[in-house]
Every structure is written in C-alpha cells, then in structure tokens.
Length: 141
Image (cartoon, rainbow, N blue to C red):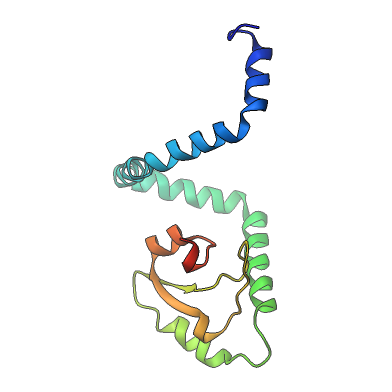
C-alpha cells in the first residue's frame, strides 16, 4: 500500500490512534496562548457582531440553554445536603466581587471526585481562572 491510498491512511490512523491523539493534544496546548490572543483580538475588533451573535444564539437555543441551566441546578441541589447553611451560601454569592465568580473548590460533578454545595467548598476566582480550571479539582490543574 502507498501513502496516497486512502485505505493505507485509515489503517495507519487505526494502528496509531493514541500516538496521533497525543500529538494533536500537544500541538493544541502549544498554540494555546496564540489562540487566546487571536480570540481576544477578534473580540476587541468585533464586539458588536459578537454581541448580536450571542443574542441570536440565546434566542434560537432557548431550550438547550434552559436544559443546561436546569441540569446544573438539579446537580447543585443533589450536592446540597440538608444541613447546609443556605443563608451563608447565598450571602457568599452576593458578596462576590466584580470581575470574579463563585467557584466550587471540589467540583459538584468532577471526573474523579464530587464535591458538595457547602460554604467551605466555595471560593472566589477571576473569570479567566475559573474558565481555565473547568470541571477539575484544584489538585488536578
């Protein structure tokens, strides 16, 4: 088989899938800063069109967004034990500084761990820190 043969490439990808995934991941990570800079530049040059796009997306995907919100709330409720101090948690959310978000230190629905919706599991993170953390425990970053 020759490299130009589509069957050769299918067989190669099947035999080396883990190696190719690792290479793709490394390339993706190596270009992370460049990608972020491009996104920031695009946003700064196109704020109005991005805002319009987001509004249209929200309007056309209400069901999907409602589902995601309901799923998040349901998971949070499952993760809230009956003895949780809801008034203190609510106050913590209200005191969140501008430019910060409330984050669960141990995620409510992590890959390897599940935290509880309790006051001592909450922290303030900047928006960018919270997005980069994703659904990972602080020790897994």
